[in-house]
Length: 535
Image 1 (tube, rainbow, N blue to C red):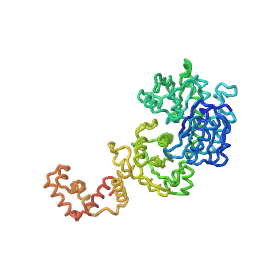
Image 2: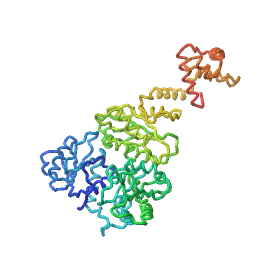
Image 3: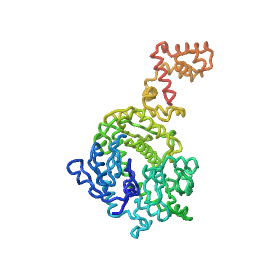
Image 4: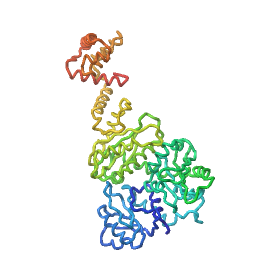
């Protein structure tokens, strides 16, 4: 089996969370399994350049395994992420590849088994099938085929700029390409460059081929175009200039390649849809507090005793958003959590994308705030507006997730209340709890029409018959904390006129406005009435 670290990372794809000392050109040998550290460790990695799969190795034993594999000249150790910021460091001579907490070892083994069977071959190999004959949905084989066709190394990204696959490349180092591959998404420097130059908008809305010379990170020339199915943006196709200049007809070839890639991208999304739905159902069960919570958490990779917070995000305006756009927003939330190296289970319920985040040891609510502000601060290509978000308090235990979800929903409602564009984009539930409580009380009063006071109805009737403004006067006075001077100023009335109206209001309604409890109830009822079409 002739393969490199580049091939390994490509096949593991989005399951990779973190890498250290993973040089793309490193040649790899066989794949071996490592049991939990014990008497058999002398058998681990006997073959030089082997890849060691740390199946069943405890987090605290990983550092020792890395030392052993480095001594035996193994190329890499693949392990599940232990979570949090604390990670063992890869010794010189052995790479560390950490998978997402919920990555399946069966999937990893299947991927490497297929590689060992020879599914990945060097470009130009006689056994490499033509692009038109590649199995639909095999994006890595597609990237290899398109690279050979266009004449330079190719990267295939989804509509949210997450790297899905890329072709092999043994040429000179290109920092931007390496960062995209290792970080699994377009570097922020490239995103900002495309946004400022107007190229990002062209990629979102057209089928133009964008030609970029002098890009960030001392990049070589890039040609970039969108892959679309009708109005749906499927992803972005890149080709970079390698050791030799791109051919003259490279833009036309790239545009044709984008059309060839469309059925492969559609199959890719179809293949992942079932997995997405399954994970979404598990997340919803935890948020609802229903079913076997421990089992659901185990399948999502959430530690049962972990400290968690529930974050929620929703668009600014009540826009008509397609299901595909919602998927991209959900991906954006999940990818930003991954970029922070925080384990998160993400799903959409209605018009809110929820993230159950596992707060790493040593972090706190300030860390959650930074994560939330990063999510609402980033540009989302499929969303013209911006996101707003909120977080619950921190808590331990799976049973409390439902209550934390309610905190987040209440905080989001309070944040969006009245559509105030000056309010912050992301808040902690505690910061808006008084507003959330008021909204809850008003909702109850709105639903319970029988709680409406007869005295207030008398004022409604009087206003309708005699064209008076008793109800407005009472509401303004109450909201001014019963301050007659302030209320008269807001109503543009002389203080004597205001006092006369208040006297008539008391006489007509029979309400004892000297009682603070009566004033409180009247104010709540009037606020509720102002927000609904019925008393």
